[in-house]
Image (cartoon, rainbow, N blue to C red; front, side, top):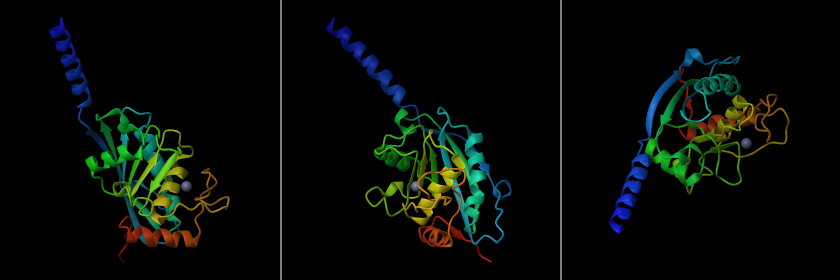
Length: 222
Ligand SMILES: [Zn+2]
């Protein structure tokens, strides 16, 4: 009897192992290039931004929703002379189930495995970080003890007004600032909402300066 039980336990542990070993893999890539992304500012772009976007195929995130958000966020960044020139959506499959939520220790592992170009945006199911935010941005200033996270934005399925939320988190990242000015109508107002879209000249300057210094924006050469 004891031998049978041992055999059963081994079989169960092998099955569990086989399941968790389902390889994390890239299932597909969809790319929006410069011609697909609006700019729309009255002035020529001074800086260029290329984003890599990630989502797991077995979450509620649909590629069309993500790419539409990138398209709609582009003009919000354009007011600072920043042209969103490329958005590449990489769809993921497999890996451990917990990779689908934001939780700092797990996110560090995921980033070590993916080694993505930055800035990278992760469209995740939920967050296990506390306090729980619908979106989080990791610049340089808030990643000294977790350097893998620098240059990443995370948005959960609960995110409202997705294009504004995406532009808001990208602006935190590029400015390398967690500030929320008490100014309704400003993109960085604490509550993201469709009408909160403006960036001040000072915010734009901070975005271009710190974004370039951190290697996340490329100055456009004349
Ligand atoms: Zn914020």
